[in-house]
Length: 394
Image 1 (cartoon, rainbow, N blue to C red):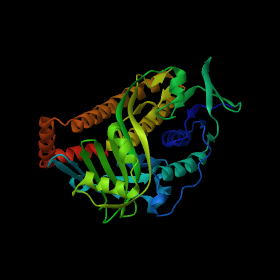
Image 2 (cartoon, rainbow, N blue to C red):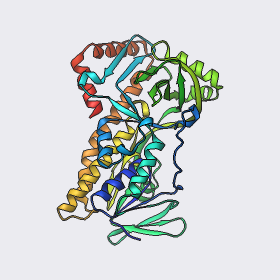
Image 3 (tube, rainbow, N blue to C red):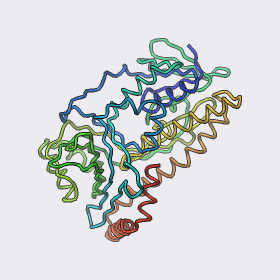
Image 4 (cartoon, one colour):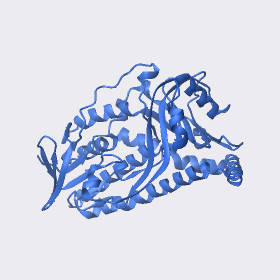
C-alpha cells in the first residue's frame, strides 16, 4: 500500500491534516493503533460529558470551517465564551477580557474532544483520496531509497515519500526516528472533570491562580455546567484527587473563593501528569512532526490544540504550494518553510506559558505584590487589553 503522505496518528491533528491534504488532491493514508471510536454519548448528565475539552480560537474555528468540519458539529454541544476572568487568589489582582472590546462575537468556543474527533473521522473518511486504517499499530519504520516504509502490527506495510508524526506527546514516530526533544516536568498533575454550578457560567472562562497551581472553569453548552482543569503541585495532587465528591467540591469552592460561580456537584474525574516538551527539529529527511508530537505545553491557557491546528494549516498550505511549484511532498523546501514559521510561534507561546507558570507559582511576597499590581495595571489599560485580546483570538 502506498500514498503521497502517510500520517501516523488519527487524532485531532492527524485527521484534520488528512482532510486538508485530501481536499487539496493528495493521496493520504492515516494509521492508528486504536479501534475506530464509537459515536459519542449525547446525554446531559454530569457523567455524559467528555473529560477532555478544547478551547478553540476563531482562527482554529475558521480553519475547521474551511474543511467542512465545524458545520457538522452538534450545535447543542458547542459553548461560545465571550469573556475571560483571571485573578490571583493570593491578592487583589484581576483582569477581565471581553469580546466586545474587539467587536468580536466571542473569544472562542469550548468543544468536547470526542465530539470534534467524531466529526473529523467522518470528514476524513469521506474525503476522496484519504484512507484511515484503524488497529494499525506502528512497529518499525525505515527510509528505503526515496520513501518511508512503515510496518504495522498484524503485518501491514505502507509506504510514502512523506511521513508525518501526529501521534501525540509520546510520539513513536519521533522516537523511532531518533529526533531529540527538550523536556522537563512541571512537577504537577492536572485533574479534569465536569462540574455543576449553582448559577450560570455566564459564557465566561474563569481562571484562578492559586499557590498550588492554576484552576480553570471552562463553560460547557449547558449554562450550569463547566469543565474543570485543576493543575496541582505533586505534593498536593494525590490528596485532592483522592477526595470524595462532596469533599472535592468543597475544596474546589475554597480554591475559587468568591470571584467565580459556586460548584455544587462533580462528575467522574481523571488526572494526568504535566510536562513540557519541544522537538529540537520538526523535520528530517521526508519526515515532519506536528502538534503534540512536536511540542506540548502547560494547559493553563488552553493553547495546545490551537498551536496544533496552526501547524496543520501551515503544513497543508506549504505542501500544496510546493506541489504547484513542481516539488514532491518530501522536498525539504516546504518542510523547512513549515518549521521556520511554526517554531517561532510555538516557542513564543511555550516561553509565555513557562513565564506564567513560574510567575504565579512564586510565593515570594515581592513577587505576589508585583503580579497583582501587574494584573490590575493591565486591566485598567483598555488599549493594552484590546491588543492582548486580539492576539489571543487571531
